[in-house]
Amino acid sequence: MNEEETPREPVPEKADELLEAARRRGRGLLDRQKRAAVDELHSVADVMRDAAHTFEEREEAGVADYVKKAADALDRLSSKLRERDLEELVREAEDGVRKKPAVFLGATAVAGFALGRFLRAGSQRIARSKRANGGE
Image (cartoon, rainbow, N blue to C red; front, side, top):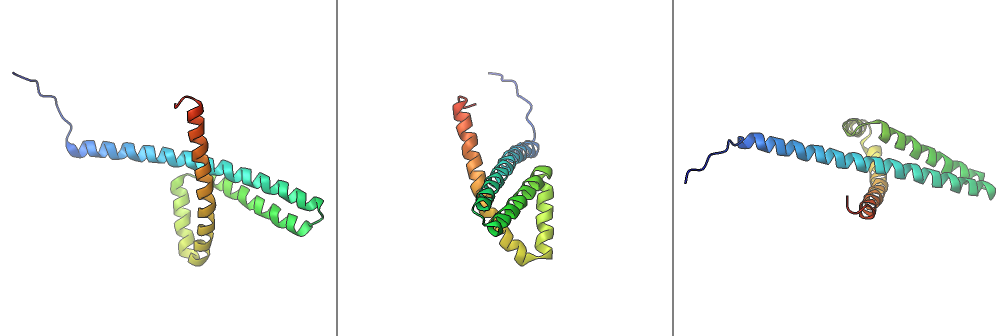
């Protein structure tokens, strides 16, 4: 039996292609999660503004101002995440660690907790949407 040999790509080139495909897929996933986090942060800011309005109606202006400021900060964070790509965000994080490590560590812990919840909610929403659309 005489089989024709098929040309094969060298293993290193194939490995590089697979690695690059994995990177593209990972970036795509992170971008989707980033968009979900942005949407969730904006939603939380809206809820906080509603809460601030309730505090104003109860004549608790001090609390209302604090909640409004927190909502504005979330909107700024949301805008910053939306406008920057992941590499930029990583560079900024590295700069922040060098300049103020203790402050950055505390802020990162709080933000990480909040973003983890938002990302989990976003991924659950994506999964529900896929199931509703027939698993596309």
